[in-house]
Length: 255
Image (cartoon, rainbow, N blue to C red; front, side, top):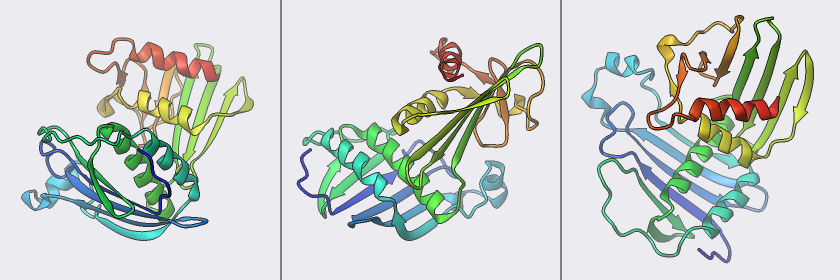
C-alpha cells in the first residue's frame, strides 16, 4: 500500500465472537505523527463482563479494572515499523464476512476509511506491540523480561536474559556462562520472532514453580512470576512435536 505521507493512523480491534468474557475486549488506537513523537490516544474496554460475577472475573486472573483510556506520546521509533507494514499491505481489502473465531481489525489512514486487511495477522501483532508500548509508557507495566536458565548436574549454570523496552523499541540481551557476563546484539525483529516462537508453547502453570530453580534442568521465566521447566511445565503444543527441541536450540545459539 502506497502512502505518500502518513499523518494519522487509526486502528479498531475487537476480539472474536467465540472469545467469552472476561477476556473479550475492544481497542481503539489513534496515532497522529508529529515531527519528534507520535501523539497517541488509546482506549481498551472489556466487553460483556456484566454477564459474570466479580468472583468469576477475579478467578480468571483479572482485577475488574482493566479498562483504560489514555492520551500521551509514543516514541517516534514506532513510525518506521508502521510504515514498513503499510508498504507490505495489499491495496485490496478482504470483503469476506468474518468467521466466529476471527478477530475484527480495521485501519483508517489519514482519516480515509480503508477496511479489513488481508495481512490481518501482521497488523494484529503490531497492535499488540503498540498496546504494550502504551502500557509501559503509561506506567501500567514494566519492560518485558525473559530468562532462560540451564543448570547442569554439577550445578554449573548458564543463563540468557532478554529485556524488551516497548517504550522506545530497544532490546537488551546478556548471557552468563561460568559467571562470565557477555552482552549480545539482538535486533527488535529477532527478539520479536523469538517471542512469537516461545508463546506458541503449552505453559502449564499448575506444574510450574515460583521459586528460582536450583536443580538440574532447563527453565524459562516469562515475567509472570513462574519458572517453567522444559518438557515438564513447558511442553510441545498440539501438532508441533519439534517445539521444545527447536526452542532449546535457539537458546543454545545465544549461550
